[in-house]
Length: 61
Image (tube, rainbow, N blue to C red):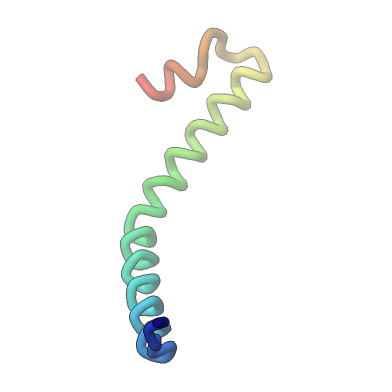
């Protein structure tokens, strides 16, 4: 037999969980955006010839 699912209750639980996840990601987002910008700047400098070598290895070291 199939179990009946309370869609409204399930939807509310999913909304709360998603809200919690978004809040956690929002706290870290600024740090992540800064890291991405730094990495893109290193790639730009590599492309222009300002720096050489393995940019990815240097960035994650």
